[in-house]
Image (cartoon, one colour):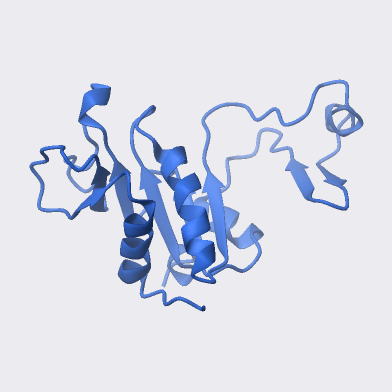
Length: 176
């Protein structure tokens, strides 16, 4: 069993502008209403700038700190500088998170995890789920979209139905 498969992980993938983040954001309250604790990993190909360069935490990193934690009564964040080290794998990132019933992953579209594609034909981009070996188990698209796929077609505008599909697929049961 791989390190990734020891977690309940489900990927949300799709081309830019198709609504991945919007769908995840809409599903989170639905999953919470089921009593599930959910983590999210958002993969980015861009440099992460979470603080202005003049703030103390950024200054510490710029001065050479390997990790800087910013803590408050409301949240904390750890900035970890890779400093020429390779990007950690999805399994390594999952191991850093607090325990959860489910971790949704936006991005990491080449990882061997079950995923659904958020696809809007009117966005003018090619679908990903048609690529060989893509690992997609469903497509969330507008209900009126004509898709030529054997995969389940989930209604993109119904995050409750998409969340239910993910829970059923992973064998997650409501805790409430």
